[in-house]
Image (cartoon, rainbow, N blue to C red; front, side, top):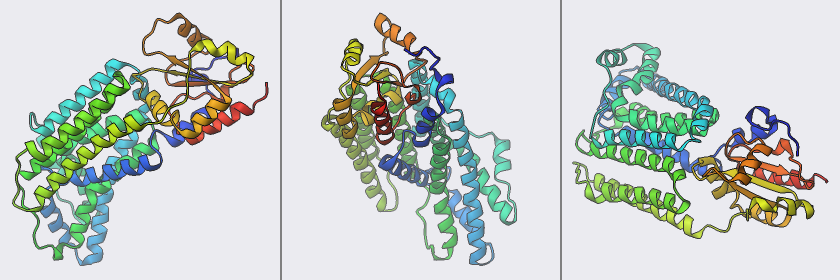
Length: 421
């Protein structure tokens, strides 16, 4: 075996580029995630801290001269919101390397989940997040011109912090765990569009607006909706600590509880008739999510056939390349590799025909054989996927240390099988 360092510091540049380019969100998962975040941003406008600002903001924009002036001020306002939130997302993602390392420890996952639950309780009304009075005064100070509109957008997050702060903090934690600056920026930019676009259109068409629903108890229901989103995020971080079956049922249980609470248990009412329809839609969406979560679990096809480490010598005799997957149940990227990449039909087909697959489960330490493999291949953390050529030597430029979607993983497999003995 090649005994050169193969840890994080010695990885080939090409093997690190792919995960950063794709990240854990791709394809339809990316589209649905961004649509959900955009809808979440719009829903935050209906919370008690933000909704009362709508008539004030519309009045401010309406006083600008001409429709062109209103559009310009509206764009500056949305731009201010987008800049503030996007920079937050970018910063969180840039610190994702540290977060990714911390998430290797189950205790950290428990702490993050506990923080998210505490933030969710603030949305349920058990405690209140308050902004210092001096900071609030500075944020609400009026300024003239386009720079004034930009400043209002920049400060909007401070004014609305008691309601949107817990949701934003929860989202920051998740973005940091992804570790992709590009994803961090685009996720929070999408959130900003959800927050800002309603203000923009209300301002542009302010003369056509006859009546907006009045502030009331219904806005507390919106806060509870955001609280259940945070509870779902807490369940997401706790999933790696349980078996796949238990993790699936925990997530489905949160969705079921959210649907029952938001649709039937909560007795919040509103003066406008559409509110009842909105409650039922949210409740049914939660129940549909629960059904899809359980359905995906029970109908998922067979994954790649990983076997014990004892077959390594046999693979060398059979002149077959080898894929060694070092993983653990508490590692989120490991589970994504298993559930998405290693269950892809193309990966499964090529693996069965061309490769010997070896699984090294590091959930619990103490197996001498596994410890020997860790030292032999200098494994620094999980997930780590090692490719061996037909002679049993590692193809170091193909080593993978993060989640990767099926398509680029297939490219690695093709390269591994074409290298001669």
